[in-house]
Image (cartoon, rainbow, N blue to C red; front, top):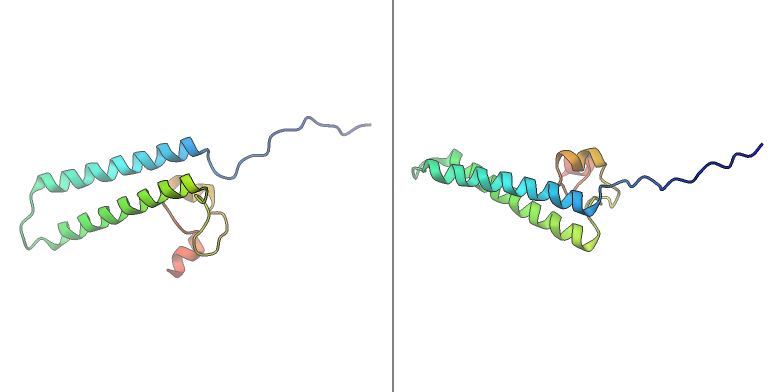
Amino acid sequence: MSLDLPRTEPRTVHPAADEVRQRLEHARTTRLAQLKALDETGQNPGDHLMSNQKDAIKRVLTEIDEAFARVEDGTYGTCLGCSKSVPPERLEILPHTRYCVACQSRA
């Protein structure tokens, strides 16, 4: 009795680059819309909360741009802390993440 089974392609750990780019583009578009909405509400000089929100959004936009660069150089999905693969579920939720959960909690 033979156990020859049809070979299947190995399941990729990380989504295809096109799918990653779409997720990152969606994240970028969302953050840009948030930034625009904050700008349109106006800001008084003493509104530190709005200023902090804008700064946080700008930081995320920078992280998204860095994630695009990692896609291009082939390092997307690899933790910058421990060099292990970032779980696909984490990348789906937070496509611009640089770290696995363990390394992020240490940062």
